[in-house]
Length: 326
Ligand code: WQD
Figure (cartoon, helix red, strand yellow):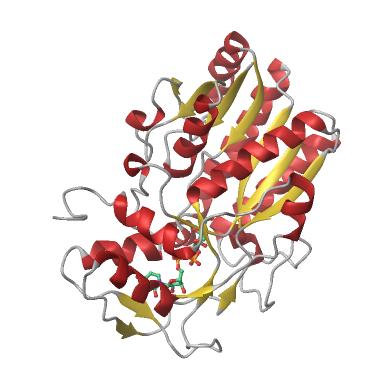
């Protein structure tokens, strides 16, 4: 049986595709290539398609039927917080409409297991020292809202008997499992710092007046390969159990501050990472660190890579034009 991976040509999706192919699983990738790169999916079959277009349900279902798809991992979504604030209608159309179309195609073809890419953004500005899956979900932007609403849709489809589903709430993903699968987006701390360092500019730190040990924000950084392995563990659990729907945090349970990450990137790259301290970025909660007891107990998964390995792997994968030795 083939696994359908939507958004499989993207940063995280490509890691999951490579793991699945490495275990001999057949993979069908559905991606519009707006952010993904077909070169990242190796010999997996690619269906280039706009999942948010309701006319896509038929061709997607046809491809799933031909490939005998029973399991789906859904990554395809827009994920820029600032863009979601400016374009909320488009974000709901893309993220919720795309998911609804995938579930419709699953119903039409008998595919009945779904792993859904969710986010710690569903927790919003939490003040909890460790965030468990039972913590209040109060997303602070349309991006986080579409992830929470997506979880509701998957749950409702499970209650209706269409499928069994797992939602994985990603904390801060970084690093690379292979040098050719680095994060191509300069949208989050690690790549934003590497981008500036390799251009000879000082990294920016948005606020050091937070109620945290060193005043800068604390986040839970998880290696993208560990995250990819969590998706395989979720698929295996769906294969074993009859549970309808469940939610799991994917993180390390350990926090690292912005200043700490910046300093370590200076050590890893050997470049001058003296930060420029700037004003707070609106909407940043002081600390967001995962409680990861549930995923370890239920799926038998836990993160293996520490922060140094995450940052070293990110540097190894930084574009050759600007990375080590450039
Ligand atoms: C981390 C910290 C910044 C860049 C995002 C989104 C969402 C989710 C997790 C997937 C913040 C600070 C950053 C810089 C800085 N992922 N920073 N200087 O905001 O925790 O969450 O990733 O769902 O995409 O919610 O991640 O990497 O943007 O910021 O000081 O140049 O680094 O202010 O405190 P964030 P981030």
